[in-house]
Length: 521
Image (cartoon, rainbow, N blue to C red; front, side, top):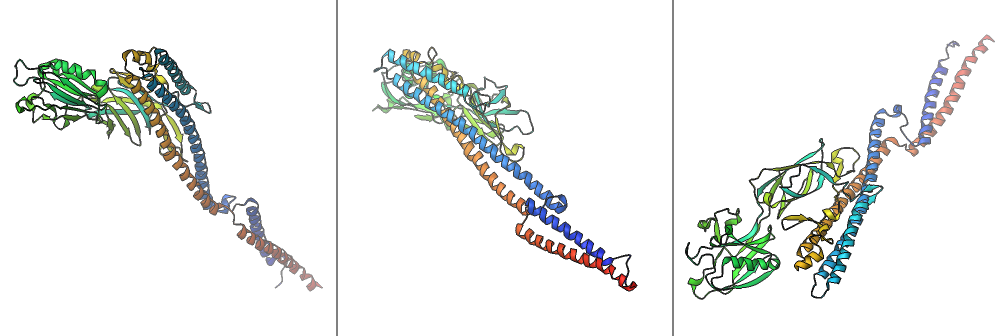
């Protein structure tokens, strides 16, 4: 049947041509933008996933840039520290040269002192001026800030890293569980018979070989030499041996002790009689150590505990302090303790009183902020951040060393200070200045090593990890969102053919209605 009110073939042809035109428009848009998804309607699920991936890609890309900038900051800091190292080494050379007093005049030593003063001033200047993009690096502005640090328990604290997860400050608790000890040997003073006239003296002539961490000397003593004189003789060569002597409880009849002048397992004391008597009855010299290196006995000295508290010995070693820091077992070295956990890394110099008495209360202080915070990951979370303290290297805070029971720093080697070459020269003793300098060199060297480890093990590995993630995320994003030009070109050709065919078919469908005129003839 032939009708003219409704041209159904034409309607069908128009609908199909419209679809084909829409498909052609999609192909042209994809080929012109290079993207398979240009609007949410193209692929709603794919759009959601691709946008998430793109966000991660941007975060990873910025994380790499942040890490590279952090690496530049570390490199700049280390370059300044290398200069400080060179200056400290030059001071070391000048100090060793000045110690050669038998071949150097006072004027030459004074010239060395002026060079040392200049080098110390340069170290402080580097500390105050080293910067990166206007950010001061070594003046202490990137160090951690502490509060409540008890000087009676902790003489020096250095925070290497701290994580303030969900809190504005971090509490640090230090609990000494085993005391630091010097190496010590004890000589009884009430032999052969308590109360006898010979007590407090050497009962026969003897040669004593005394050895410590610094060296060995041999001293000769006559019969009936008072133990007080033995103490004086030993203390006069402490600089050569590292061994100090004292009367037990200040009483020669109580005996005397030979002790290392430092704490820790690196310290030792050895006392031997080299001229053994031919008469066994004359072998009255015997030294004792604390059994199993236990706690140092108090007063009165427990000579009655020979065999249970004391044991016959001619050599003893010191003990490192053992402490818990926030519940973690710290590594002890003499009076120093260090701990390195994901949440806290500190290096503490304990006072002698605190490190040698485990019965004292826990010492507490707070880390209230500071440190250099580096955002290394794509998400702003504590797990993707690294925090490191960069302390000042000013001479007034560098090389802290206990000298005569007081903590002294590199600045004390300057002219007019207690450890200057002139002051040391008057005492004929450069050991204090040398100890402070060695401590300063160790501090800078260790800090450079820590900075290098941070750059190598944290920053560089983070960059490689982020770059690998960036590559994989980009590949995934490309597969979802980017247009496949080969497939789109093929689809474009198909759409162009269908548009041409649809246009021709629509023209034919419109011509069919005109054939009705022939019936009206």
